[in-house]
Image (cartoon, rainbow, N blue to C red):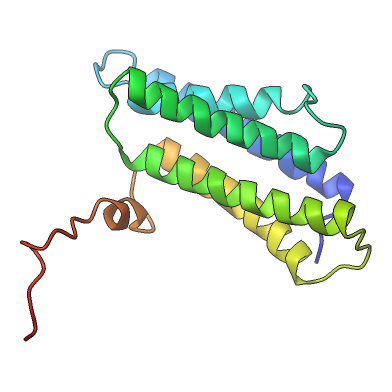
Length: 168
């Protein structure tokens, strides 16, 4: 099932509202804390999703969202590098989510505009539910800063030879 334009606009507004609420929530709870990593990350996401709603980098919506996701990934990585911010739950989920969203957006763009496919198929359903589910997960991680899917734990695993036990 492909989500039509009307429902897509409503979901887009809900996602933008979710990132705004995540930022405001983090602003309220981090007012007197020294660790403001989640606040800065939620600000970057809120600004990115808000601006992508009215600034057009491409005439194609899918490419526009792709460009903004890639730009957001670059901004987050630059912030982490220059501010010397260590990887934490939020960055893991946001970078992974934006990367998956970018892959899905590029795939749907190629299917619809390059291959000129007009009939719905599995990719369209995967895109519709995948992008929105990933966005909701990113909002939840910004709100609660928890490793729900154990993704951060998987990314942070140390596979050095000293810690791996031999079976033979």
